[in-house]
Image 1 (cartoon, rainbow, N blue to C red):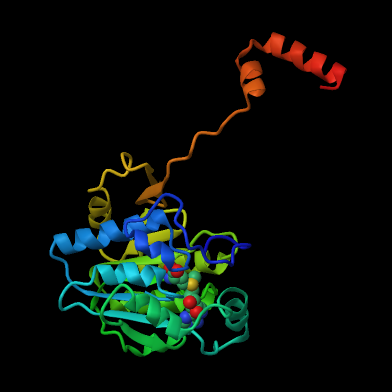
Image 2 (cartoon, rainbow, N blue to C red; image 1 turned 90 degrees about the horizontal axis):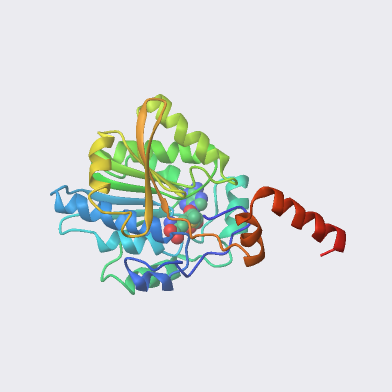
Length: 283
Ligand SMILES: C[S@@+](CC[C@H](N)C(=O)[O-])C[C@H]1O[C@@H](n2cnc3c(N)ncnc32)[C@H](O)[C@@H]1O
């Protein structure tokens, strides 16, 4: 989700989308991550990597529809969401009530998905903790998207579900790992990095892309695309000895009011004199 105040799902991506019709589905899945999913899933298939797809938290299907677009013959997609059933605990129920209850039903998710794809994924309408029983085959997935509850205990459990479900070189994407209103997600994500061997590979403002396999392979795949020419920034850095790639939108140049621009370009003494004269005249 975007930010603390933003509980209204977006129906628009600011600069377009790899699947423009996706904009008709409300959700919190925005252009940069749409493009990153699109590229990474396509690159996995092009490299001959097969495996199932898993999504925890699909809301009305915006991200699920894009995942479904990349399903190859023989692959299966599984999703898990509470939809219109009750949450198991009070905090999760409060989160559901404030953000999703008024708009979310399983029927609307299914209708949205079927507007794009002929067949529904395997759906578990349950808390994501239900998947801890091993109903997703261990080592079967090439890509897992975790975007359900924001509570630390739940996310820590979801990360364990992802770890078990992923094949060795599979990719897990963790939503809201750094948002102001989701400190529990941040805690669970970095705990997994420091205690379970989860390796960060790529970071966007909204999502953490990691693997328990080789993060360089994920980074190589992601950087097969020329992101700069497409209007994004690419930065590389090291976090506690772990090399990561950061992707972001290129900032749009700030427009400076003309009067401010003129005084900024003048020598400092003259600028000070003009400011003083303006203050004196009350301008
Ligand atoms: C941020 S939304 C998902 C957004 C969606 N992936 C998208 O891109 O638009 C979070 C979803 O997680 C679900 N959810 C919240 N807590 C859950 C839990 N404990 N178990 C399963 N689903 C949960 C909510 O019903 C909601 O649909």
